[in-house]
Length: 309
Ligand SMILES: [Mg+2]
Image 1 (tube, rainbow, N blue to C red):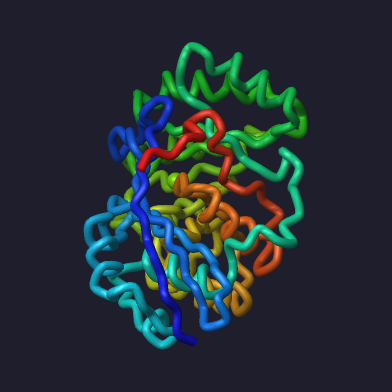
Image 2 (image 1 turned 135 degrees about the vertical axis):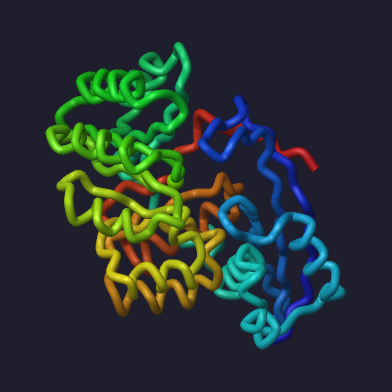
């Protein structure tokens, strides 16, 4: 199939910069693709790079799009190199119609996990989200000393209703000793869903050992950001939770093959894409490989709706 395409870069500022162990993130930048096939049908795709998760930069993605001169074929899409995983996702999801709005069933709030901001308004925001029907929440940790953070998390867990869940994301920022402290605390927390990436990806053997040693569930995120690293961690024996950021994982078709073959325990997650990337994420998680776990795409507290060119 031959396509003609256009692309436009976008910038979306966060309402408040997102603070993680990787640093402050103030503006989400990406590219919206519009592909027109030979029959004149137009589909969209989104390139939403996340360089600190191993993807190309926005500049590299723009250079790649520009180099194509407004035309691309199915064969060229399949040949996008692994060094451009966000472009692999953007072009293939457009060609597979993953971002089409048709037949997308609305999901209830309890199917979404909301990332809550560490601020004086935390409990107010939590109450507001609970009233709206959300039940799964996520908090960034490894930003302060563990004793202070555990006290905060214990209080949040005590606030949640019995059907509530909390996910904690360290973004690889804990030491081995701190990770053990957190996991030990987690053993008695029924509403703690998992601790995400307690150690940096370079400490994979420690992560494996911790996952065997503790009942508290551990999810890998930075360790499995692209398909190759996901396959590698699986091959080395990881059977805990996998966080999959579809928009940066590479080709959705290859991810689907992996999921159908190995049936991993996954959480699908946003990288703060626009509605285009989000539709592809929803479609994948509803029709392609559904997971029982809440979708990590509750960004309503974080982004302004307006897109600036
Ligand atoms: Mg994470």
